[in-house]
Length: 370
Image 1 (cartoon, one colour):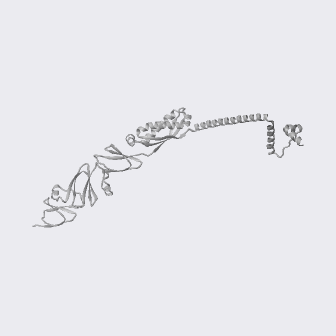
Image 2: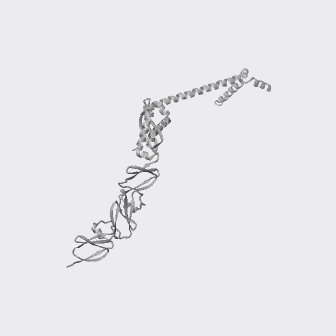
């Protein structure tokens, strides 16, 4: 006796019939009635584009229903449906349904730039398959493949394929001017005075490739170079030379630090002394020395002024000796100044005294008038 079985296949389905475990037919969308108790079926959902099936099963599927593609080791594939990326294909053999005419496959060469990345593509492609790096305006980018330097990249956004055969990487180097502070350096001068220095060094990267390949920590390298230069200079000068020649120390350190860092791809902009801290007892001693120096300088100025005043008095005396009338006028002027501070001044003189007080010419003229 034969038994019938009704099979319904939806638009998004495909069915393969098996008899005694072997595929015998493929059914597209529709309604089917089969007569056998020995028939089984395998359903495929064509809305899931990628599928796997045994070779015997694939042999029963019409070639118009699916496509088989081989993605090489240097390729990547993306399946689009209605223009939207829905599946990412790595190297290997892939089979996908083509019953929907809007299904398209795009294959990309990983040695070429990435395609224009939409938001859907960025969500679909695994993050370990590409790199997306933005080099800012104050940076330079360094591109590496398999650990080998390839090129310098100017500011911009870069998206590159990366895979085991050509592992890509982009590093960035900050090209801005940087400052490092060397604080609290305990140093000893040539005359055995211990002091503490705080230095500053300003630098900028001149060759990003050299910096990336030769320097593990750029800031530490500049710090060490400035520290050693400061120790070398301070050890060769006395405290007085150090305090009086800070410009000379700056020039010395710039020469030394520049010589050390040029080979590292770094340009030294400025090296300077920020603070000089002396021990308490040394501060007190220097204050006393400065006080004594200022006092001695004040005494010199005072003696110079006294000498000048004495010389002026001597010159005045010579003038008055040669001009008696001028001497008398000076005496009257002095008496006038005294009178301003007291109520009255009485001058009692005889005829002889009046003659000595006033010039003879004035007395003569007065008598004639009388």
